[in-house]
Amino acid sequence: MFSRQSLLLWWGLTVTIAYLITQYIGNTMEHGHSAVLWTWGVAMAIPTLMTLLMGKDTNALIWVWVLITAAATLENVWVHATQSKALMPFSYHALWWVFGAVGFGYTAAAVEGADRKRMYAIVAALHVVGAIIMLIDKELMKGYEYIVLALIQGVPMLLDVPLRKRQHAAATA
Image: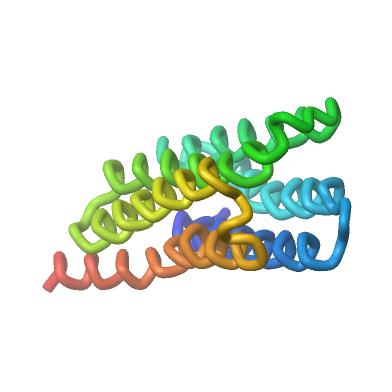
């Protein structure tokens, strides 16, 4: 029904757009947590549903992303529902950097091709740095945090497709 490449493109597009919308909501609404949660729920439903529809044509890597995305989103919903003020800075900021570090670290280990492995390892390292910054002081990136996340979470998935094509072309040449 869907190819892995089209699925990866949808993951990259929805993540990039959802982070940019999150940045907009954060800059324009004083209490936009519900709007952000709805944005992410709808955005992540698209590639998650596509993954479910692909069934056996997916791989373990895609399921890792589905599971960690669902876990992080459910954690955010729980924190919002319980109004846990102590957890909000971690949940709405540092968690998404940690999430990226874990997901992209696993991706770097799982993908084939030196260029793809290198790209995902660099992205995982950038997420570790971002997580440390967020844990030290979430205000350090205020005003552009989610733009950075859009660039280092969504864009690598979009770049993976041409890297994979180049790798395939080199292997068949």
